[in-house]
Amino acid sequence: MNNQDQIPRPAPIVDESSQPFFDAAADAVLLLQRCNLCQAYLWPLREVCTECLSTDLSWAPATGNGSVHSFVIMHRLFHPAFQEDVPYNLTVVELDEGPRVTSIIKGISNEEIRVGMRVSANWHDVNGTPLLHFEAS
Ligand SMILES: [Zn+2]
Image: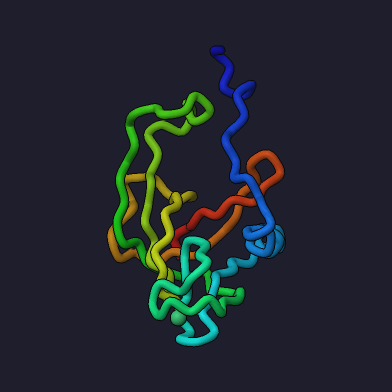
């Protein structure tokens, strides 16, 4: 296929455990799991707190603010749906709540991305599913 528009972008499969996250994402709210025992924020989705092994977890809204921890610029195409995006960034953002989230930075050129720069969460739609990305703040 030559037309990338005919190739759907892969989107997450929303299941029972991730439904609260995506419900909040539809309202542009970043939810993180939070341990009710030690108060640690968790990412990605867990069944057990990585800090204290408690299974008493709940959801809590995050600020969506963080800093670039690391990034790479992808020059190689791994999926034909992303043909028009190459080169694109893959960025690890350290949220102010602590967890590190692998995402992308939108709204600036790849050359402007710097470790330590402040970013904030935003959302874009992929096949009806809200996906997280970050923008310079
Ligand atoms: Zn804990």
